Amino acid sequence: MLTESDLVRYGRQILYTDFGEEGQRRLKQSHVVVAGLGGLGSASSVYLACAGIGHITVVDGDFVELSNLNRQILHWEEDIGERKTLSAVRKLAKLNPSVEVTPLFERITPSNVGGIIEGAHTVIDGMDNFETRFILNSACVGAGIPFIHAGINGLLGEVTTIIPRKTPCFACIFPQGLAEEGAIPAFGVTPALMAALQVTEAVKLLAGFGDLLAGKMLYFNGETMEFTVVDLVRNPECSVCGF
Amino acid sequence: MSVTVRLQLLLSQFADGQEVVEITADNNIDCLNNLTAQFPGLRRWLFTKQGEVATYVRLFINRRQASVDAELKDGDELLILLAAVGG
Ligand SMILES: [Zn+2]
Image (cartoon, rainbow over all chains, first blue to last red; front, side):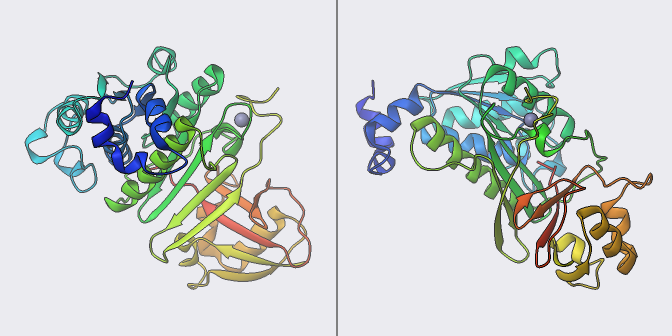
């Protein structure tokens, strides 16, 4: 299953005792959806491709703009005006040609989300708004697909792994619906850090080792360099995952 | 009940820069009301114009997620965080 080239390319992570060749094989057989190719999705898709996830679907309905470039590392000056999905596929294919990358140039809606996540082993949150996260959360809970959430604001970030019917879901944490949004301050490093944590979660989840941020939210405060982990609580009356 | 309120950095600037404030309250909503009476600048971050606790506010008693009406005991720590929704 693993080729000679795989054994060389992934040699250093295969050395990790709890991971090994079996872990690498599992990653190779995995399909991960990266929902959104902004600051979070740029960084997570790079690390997913490096790690050797067999199939990555990248979803975004936007075009690259100059104002994206301080944080969306997958998109470069030459890509301005280009579809983010096309920009992403070009870079990821050069980075690791053995990974299959499927671009979906779409905005995620309640009517297309089912098809987008179908067959995925996990969905990585790269969204920049509440509304689409709710859509993804509901679809993932319905399909039983783990949803690895992250969000950022300036130098603040948060990450949690939602395992349908086992952990609180996004709607348990936000029972009341939408909050207002404007342009949110953002450095490049905060989504990069949170995306690296999301991929850490994805690798453990897919390869089957280590502990997850399941039922826990990790908060990062870049101004004080504090990481805080808190326990999340499932809402028995949750409109999405309640029984 | 005297509780220790720990404010996220973003919020502490509206509490004279204090990240930790001692508040007397019996439950979370009481605590938020007493807190914002002391620091009115916090009010628009924690409450909607209609006076409801804003949806992006998350409350944790002793680092465990808690509802708006959860009760507080002497010595509890109430951590107040705002959700980070950018990407
Ligand atoms: Zn739920």
